[in-house]
Every structure is written in C-alpha cells, then in structure tokens.
Amino acid sequence: MTSFTTKTGIILDIRIASVYDLTAIKKLNEKWTVASLDIVDKENGFLYCDSYNEVDLKKIIEAEEVAIATNNGQVIAYYINDNYSNLVTDYKDAIKKLKQEGTISPDLKVSLRTQIVVEKEFHRMGIPVAMLSFLKPLLKLKYDLLFSIGINENPKRIAHQKAGWEIIYENDFNYYCIYNLNPNE
Image (cartoon, rainbow, N blue to C red):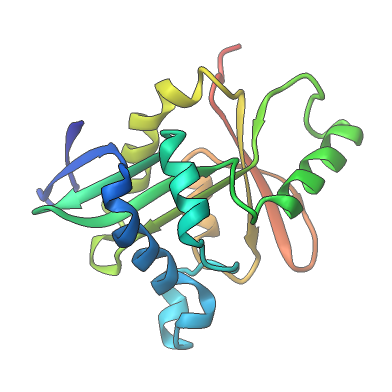
C-alpha cells in the first residue's frame, strides 16, 4: 500500500484490491457503464461495455492486477488490468490483427484490456496515473504493453493521452491505444 496526495491535498491510499473489495469495485463499474448514465453525466466519461460479473472480477482480483484508491476506507477508484474475464474476446482479436499488421511487434507481451474508473468528485486529481505507477512494477513482470479500446465520443480520450497512452489505430467508432511499460527498452 502507498499513500497518494492529490493535487487538491486529499490523501488517498492506493493498494492491490482483495476479494473484500469486489462489491465496491463492481458497484463503481456498474455506475460508470454507459447504460447506467444520463446524457449529462457522459460528459464526465463512461465505459462502453458490459459490466463485470462477480466471477470475472474475482479472477482479475486474484491475479493481483487491480489497484484501488480509497478515501476514508471507501473505494473511490479502480485500475483493472483484465486478462481473465469473458469480456476480452474483442480485445484478443484486435491485438492479433494489430500484431499481424505490424502495428504491434509480434514478440511483445500485451495485456488484453485496461479499465480505469474514478468517482466524479475525484476527477482531475492525478489518481489514474498514481494507480498505474503503483501497479507498474507488478505488471512489468508479465507484460510489455497495456492495451485498451476507447470509444471516440468518450471525453476522456485526451486524459488517456496525457497519461502516456498512445493511440495506435482508430476508426469511425473506436480508438485503440497502448501504454508502454518499458519505454526505454
């Protein structure tokens, strides 16, 4: 566990999630899924996907690839590195195609799917970057790149780029991005 002080002076704890955090993570995930949001709330970002089920979340948590940020004991953010759920099929196919085309080197180990959620009142405080910094030493042992697919209309696209994510492909609907865990190699 590590402490993180936000840009506004709030002290958060960042740690690897445990199965005891499953309900809070699932609740956050469901809250930010596009189907759960009003049009006005979409301005704050959203997840264009199905919600995680408890079985899949438990697999990801047990793999120790989820960081959470807590404020006064409450989970206010998560950073999921998903290589285990039933939701990764499209990601596997996209990575396979990008490797075949040479956009991603075929010999690199690529994590299939990354998802970040932060409660609205904690946006713009550097929390995703802090959670990734916390997770990075663990993830570097398994992967060279993190991969994510975003929907073009999601306003968080710019935030992803500012945090070091590189857009490597886009079409009319999605953008595909990678985060290099070993940028100097």
